[in-house]
Length: 247
Image (cartoon, rainbow, N blue to C red):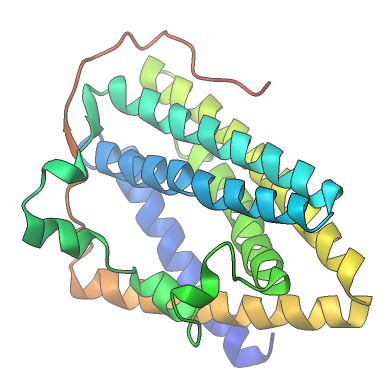
């Protein structure tokens, strides 16, 4: 990254870290925050499964195996956040039950992903069409940063309250998985490109991430830090019930 990009990255990452810590620590905003993670983690599973089938069809068994494990991990992550929501007596809303007008708004891309994949159409990033280098490099940056973000989020949770302690353990488990995901994605890049080209493509997506974080931060400021509700009341479960763990 050049100096300006590095400054943008620090500003965006700092703002995102502050926003995450504040919303995760606050019992009132925590459920909506957890719901966003449940949707993001679970929502990536079909995409990864489709990529696994594509890699297998193309004869790349190594990548297909890694993608299968990745999809399994993301499914478990969704279960971790869903379980944490239940410990707060909440669950993700059923978008199919929303009025048509509101439902269509949910489908709009976030400012972050609009900026991150600027220049790529929806068709360009579908699993049957996305360029492998685009997928590997863009996802590598997201997974690498997510591993650090989740670790920081876990650090702000207290251990003297059962729900927080349980959630902390779950988030730390997610962070470890994200680190492993970043590792195989980087190795996949190295299998396809000389190291100098790996460095270049990673730097490109790091720059995109910095700009995307800034776009997200500006959007949050415009909204006063508020986001739409993603939860509704659900059955409350006991706090001491174990979260899903890695196989």
